[in-house]
Image (tube, rainbow, N blue to C red):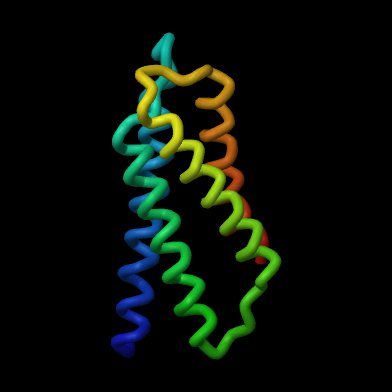
Length: 117
């Protein structure tokens, strides 16, 4: 395994940790009456966005073709998630609909990565 492949696998691991943080931060609030954007969601969204861009760079350098439509849609979703998280982090609570939207967008982003080949 080359150094580039090792780096790519490490970035992929960090990307998955970012997803886990974002989605875990969402899930721990299921029973709360007033959900919030917690630190796990904030750091997870940043991690997913940065490592996602890095994974695209690795893919572009690699020999396989890149599905730019899929990557574009995932980037837009990641940006929307990150912007919503950053803008609503300063509030002590967020509406339940916004909390649900953040969870839905997060799962949709992961589903696109896994299901769209």
